[in-house]
Length: 202
Image (cartoon, rainbow, N blue to C red; front, side, top):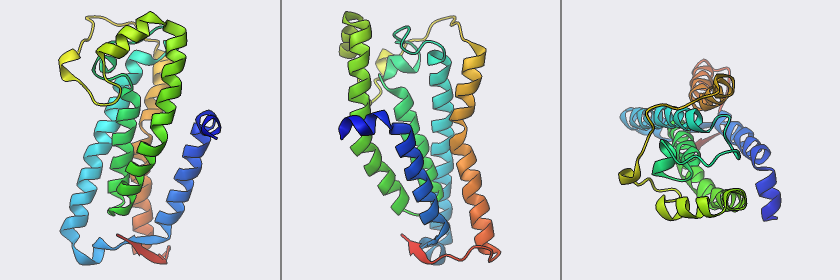
């Protein structure tokens, strides 16, 4: 079962996203009627996290694009933490969840990440150990898995990037921003009465 989830991670993530979108379309935020200031606060937190997550993923892609499984990347964001793409993806996803102006989606997002992504990280690190051996073992001892260590930061003076691959990675990093736009569109359709919510979420 674990191997099935690891091998189908992208499709499972997309299905969860579609299901979450359906729940969101059919619901209103409980807090909209209770406190406009609180919902504004939740949305602004969401925008901040989405910005950090998107920029962070683009930063990671700058280093990894064209090099994945060909070279062990240990510079830039990869000098802070071994899995920066997942760290920034979690921040971005949490931002989208807060942008729903509920507390339900952030809690579910956090639970989902903490239950699922450790399995993905374990598998990927086993692959890296097989590919890079002692070099990865040394990197693993020096750099933490998911909690950044600022004192270990290092970036080179110059770095060669494949622009075509990086451009593709860059667009994938913008998904968080586009999803927030979709959320705002749905909110507008609800206010116009085009979509009628069936329940409220805290």
